[in-house]
Image (cartoon, rainbow, N blue to C red):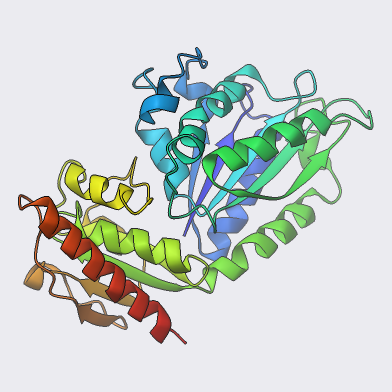
Length: 323
């Protein structure tokens, strides 16, 4: 399970950074994989309203968001955004990332494609501001509600703190660590109880990608889904992306992952292979299955569709058999 932390403060060693690092430390302690994205270090260009994304599903501004940040937003099971208040909203650097999530919004609402993790992904907010005004966080809550909708996450809640201005003030707050740890446990513990299943093939470009997408789409509340390849390709198979789009499932921004790296950082309960044979190692304690599906890469689109549909049947049967 991946917890993505988005650090939105432009200040080094800020109160916002303390909030997020405390949450991520508890996530690590609970057993989640974590990644913190320092927004200001990415130099993200603001949205220029080309509207290209609403026609193609991709932003024409290259290199700053695509593919890494979009990919992280899609991989994450939980997205935690941390920000100070600048004029009743986020700093400009974080707002640029939020505005550029229009690409993901367009894929859902203009192209009618569904991210497989959309139903299950969770979003949470950590925020602090210097004043004590009753309306201090109102604008931010609206922004986060629609940001999380754009990236395919439910807005699950927030921790917000007033009258935090000077460096170190957040660390002196009498209940902050108790608050953060409580919310992290409440958010993450149900997800950490899911069965972890790894789908593997040689290139992680086609069969295992389809299987992982279907598993997450059908049962992301019950399965912590991983996919990897023994010899990963540089990119996923475009014909596979096309036939999954025919089913309304969005495979954009996915990347093949090395099998060894995935196994170094996870202990799956089950490993399902589909043709990588002896190159997929046996993992102690993990149930092993081999679906023995033909590799459709380089074959006709009808073969790709046939393998897609067979994978969907296998995944449905797998989910039905889960306790």
